[in-house]
Amino acid sequence: MAHMTRRGAILGTAAAAGTLGLGAAGFSAWNHEAQAQASRRTLIERRESQYNTIYVVRQGTVVTMMFGVNEQLFSESAYDTADPGRLVFQYTQMMMAGLAYPAQPRSILEIGLGGGRMASYIRDEMSDATLTCVELDPAVIELAREHFALREDSRLRVVQGDGRIHLDRNRDTYDMIKLDAYRGTFVPFHLTTREFYQLCRRRLRTGGCITQNIAPDTLLYDAAIATMKDVFANVDEYWTGSTLGTSSVIAVAYDGPRKTVQQLATAAQALQTRYSFRHALPDIVARRREQPLPTGGRVLTDDFAPVESLRAIERNNARRQ
Image (cartoon, rainbow, N blue to C red; front, top):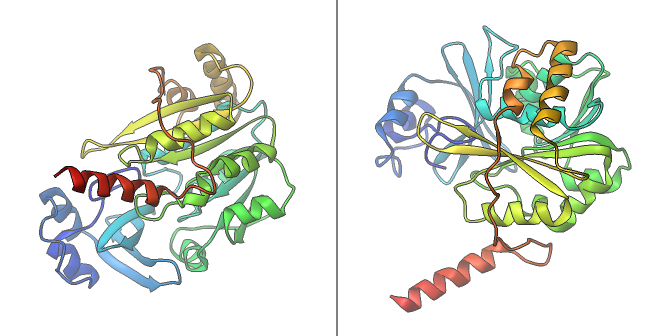
């Protein structure tokens, strides 16, 4: 996403290229706001892994982890060294909405670690919560420990591996499964299919939910919502805005009757009273989107690769020209 999106600001332009050593080619068309942001950032570390080109940059007191994909940079996680308890990105605050859905949100699985700031926030704010974080890229885990104050203990465990394989091989159950694994603008396809969501459902405790960050400006957004609705009785949405005019969508999928506004408000207030969250949970759940969800998206399955559909659309458009 060549703009500020679900993962914050993207560095671009020749200014960013000079700072990060990317080379100026391909960046000249990026917008002026990105240029200004890029010029204020300092590279701390660049790491090539099997899966990503990873940059850790600093702007003022905020350290950001960024992934380079096709000469674009996507912000993955941010840590304010002057205010460690703050979740810098709005979408990470909104991901906490899922805590209001289970009766007792004490066991949480997170797929996609980034800098580990959401997991650290929950561990620090909720004294009786336990978290398991699964991250595919070992370099991401190392950098989270080195630069983002990721601290593992008896209540926060980090596992290196593929999130779906972990769910398949382990029979542990959870009150909430948080999904925030991205490759550039897209969630890895095997983490979006009916079969994957069915696996998540089997690993949820009664009353549990999955909470997923979905980019609304991709062609597969409608399909992702349709697939979640195919597996779960309910899908609630929370939208976030950004300074560049785009949004993130946090989807909360769960079974049973749909939660009413009052039920969510009551649950959120009880949790807020108990834990005194830095980011007030009642304010977060009050932002549930009540408009109808998109319809008509194709349900994604393991034997349907969306790239084939997109190629078919491209070929059809080419024939019509």
